[in-house]
Length: 103
Image 1 (cartoon, one colour):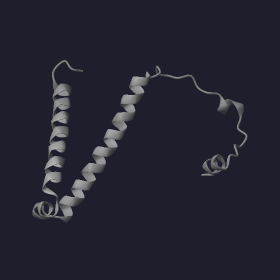
Image 2: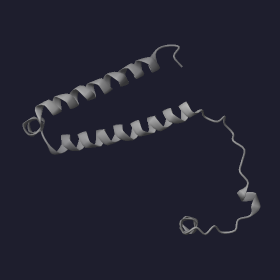
Image 3: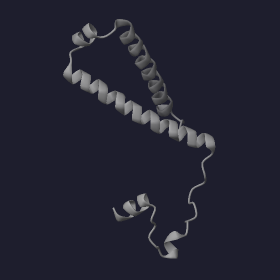
Image 4: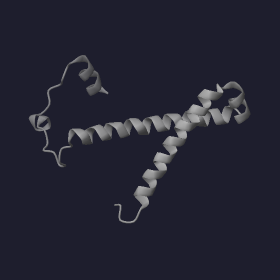
């Protein structure tokens, strides 16, 4: 807590020189494309979790009948088509992962 507070205030406490030396990297550096895919995947994981939580809450609070009664039918159909497309992409990834010799 103290270090966070002083870092926010712009005050850096004096540290022994041995703690200030950067350590050599143990793994090779990532390329720009590798950094991009890692960042994209992190966003994807967060958004999938967010969508899952929203749908879970809707399912717990409302019946499917109510969802149909109060939603815009065209918008709901579009959402369902998008989720179907996402689902099929994940199924394809799973099949590629599970294919013998793919690892």
